[in-house]
Amino acid sequence: MTSWQMVRIVAGFFILLSLALGIPGSPIFVHQWWLGFTAFVGINLLQSGFSKWCLMENIMRKLGFKAGI
Image (cartoon, rainbow, N blue to C red; front, side, top):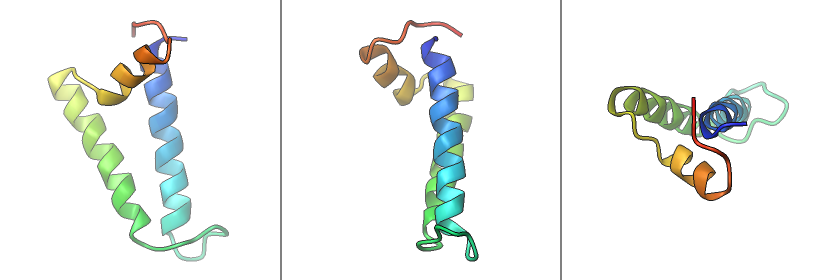
């Protein structure tokens, strides 16, 4: 598995988890401010699309995932 594949998996997990924690009526609702984390992940994905730099990818490489698309 490449670092970019892992970045996408982690980003998707973070988005789904923060939505579940932030939407009232969700079984694991905590507080609506969790939706800010959803926005944070989205902004970072957008930024990495333009700049071709992603902190999470660098972290994944240091954890031993191979570089690649």
